[in-house]
Image 1 (cartoon, helix red, strand yellow):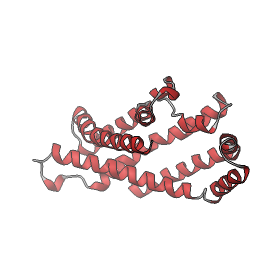
Image 2 (cartoon, rainbow, N blue to C red):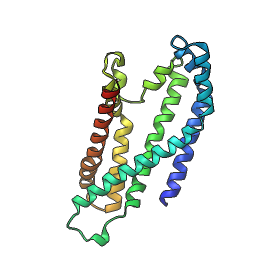
Image 3 (cartoon, rainbow, N blue to C red):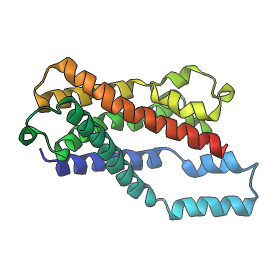
Amino acid sequence: MKSKYYLLVLLGLSFLINFSSKYFIDFKELTYNFYSEQLAQEQLEKLIENQEKWSWLVYIVLLIIVLLRSSLVALCLSVGNFFYNIDEDEEQEPKFKQFFRIALLGEFVLLFVGVFKLLYFLFIQTDYTLLDLQQYYPLSFVNFLDLETLEAWLVYPLQTVNLFEIAYFFVLVYGLHKLLKNKYWRSFEMVAVSYGTGLAIWLGLVMFLTLNMS
């Protein structure tokens, strides 16, 4: 299947999950309760009005995130493959779009984050605030910690330590293994070095920005 079909299905499911979240979760009430003691009534109404007015932008942001994340991951895999197979015949080198397709397959794993999160707040933690919704990340190490005692710059890296990220990693490994037709452990090593390096750089950037903004 071509990358564009994967992308269309992926975006369709992403939009469906986002729409379902808005349908089942009353973000208007959560926003009102969260900011009621911080903002005047007029400011609060203006905030909620703007959120509803620009809610369609979420779908554009989702598209940008999927394309950007998949492109960056594909770039990492492409660079890793280049250095690991630098002595190979260039005519046999996979194209960027093939790495992009592998990254898109990995994105399907991350869809379950939204599904799991929605089900969690619908059936398990039914009494929650806007902050609970923002800070909770399914099957993540951070859920075993007290977020109030953590430095802000540590929250995102700890959220990244989760089972979905591990599953995403192994989808990349399997995809690379099938594409290159090499030994499984060689693909594992390539993903660990290339994607792992890219992820470490990204986490470092987020931590740096969080420190400077706090």
